[in-house]
Length: 58
Image 1 (cartoon, rainbow, N blue to C red):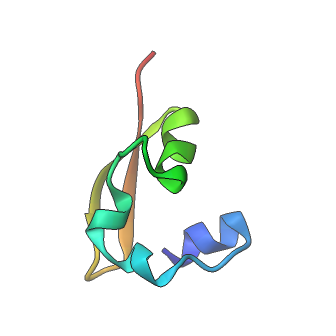
Image 2 (cartoon, one colour):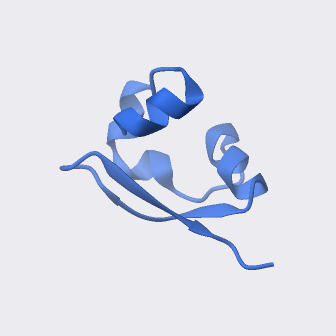
């Protein structure tokens, strides 16, 4: 997740270390941001601090 922090220029919240934070849930503002931009989280490997984003097909 360090790469995400570099891109956004901010430190992610502590909760971002847990898979539940990365759910594709339109009710959560942070999740709505990537959903609106046309991305879904495909999977998250918390032990390696990796998140996979998948482009949503139009």
